[in-house]
Length: 382
Ligand code: ATP
Ligand code: MG
Figure 1 (cartoon, helix red, strand yellow):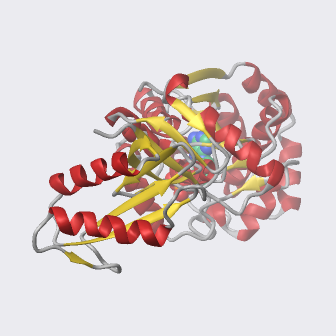
Figure 2 (figure 1 turned 180 degrees about the vertical axis):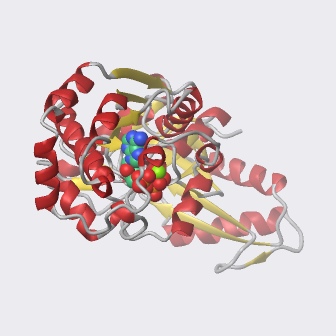
């Protein structure tokens, strides 16, 4: 039976202060899933107590490059040998290799000597096994540390990236589509904690729409422990913008309004970036001219992690993280209902300004929408 899970950190090139912050944040994040007394974070690795549940939960922690269930014994030759002979009894294999590392230079055998010795132990206790250093069926890793030695056979590859929240927060525009949940996941990967913003337009959108958003956020919350959603009722604003004289600009004006609202909320909550699931040239509102005209209203950076993705690349990730089955559920979306038959694909800033002057209640309606938005909290249930 394993005693521990050995956790290896991602981004090992980090140094000094950055590395300290990285480890501290990673430890904090691990504690969202695993009780404090079961976690020990060191300078170059961490350990948690072994359990199936802990093994499962580590799948959701960004900043870990890989982990291994390990046997922990005192750094004593007989104790190590005992574990190695047990491992070879349990495992089926034809060829094997020993990968021993002596980190404790006071240990009386070198790494090479340890490899020879334990190779001999395996051959002595088995029949018809061969040594294969390149592609063995079974590789037994032996790490001799100061007090303890860690013995393991498996590397489990983890999410990599940076610990969530080590890069701050982003206000992420989330819809029930395929793209924005995947974008949220990729932002988490670079250490951003995602705060969600969603626009609904009841009665055009209904419970099926908000249920979808809840389900999507539940999935993404698993990777960051908890999440907040600002849900803005956009019906009044949608109807108001619908009155504009140039109907081709409806979507452009609505998007500018989305981002003005996002910008205000981000400032109010001290969030330093806005993000979305946009993809260059995918639809009318995502041409360069559209992005140029729309993002003008933001005074903070707008991140678009999917900008250069092909749809099938996005779908692959949506399937991997399990948002795909939710995203394809049928529900009315805010934008679909509002889109004019032939929206402008190259909107200009000048025309947008002119039309916004017509809509002189826009600012106050936006403030009112922020005032009345619903704030929801999500927690992982593990
Ligand atoms: P998605 O699959 O993420 O909806 P999409 O390819 O369908 O993306 P659009 O519907 O044009 O593209 O939306 C572009 C981006 O605008 C979305 O990725 C999302 O970030 C944001 N967005 C769209 N609708 C909403 C909404 N109702 N509330 C909040 N953000 C939205
Ligand atoms: Mg969409």
